[in-house]
Length: 192
Image (cartoon, rainbow, N blue to C red):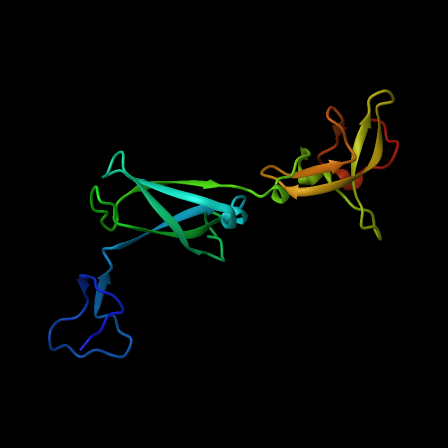
């Protein structure tokens, strides 16, 4: 006698009648047709925003014009080595307008609302432009003084990581020329 934790549909059978089976050997594959799961591949630059998701709407190619509301069931803790994306499993119920079957392709639209504390502005620079001095906790960048065409070490206050680098809260202004490569081999006052 086999008992399942939910009512479902047997979609695959892995053994024949009267065949001996071992403990924990798969016997059948059972699907819950009422609850549908979909796995999304979320880039590492966006996975931190999963807790701010407000709404998820899924559209399946087989059901054009039908939006199915979904919720996050599980957020993966390890990124794929090949794609550097995190698996996020979303869950939804069957819509009244049709039936979603396993393997159907669809697109998920995710709407999130970041709290004010998570929104940060600043000047975005490449991470390679930042450096620290030995024995110091401060962060610096090399700024080019356009009048003398020489380097000046400028202390900055970095903020959040951004898609292409880091946001700088204070220390540089729009229009400043900042060195983005080779920052560890430069010195104060060097002509450029």
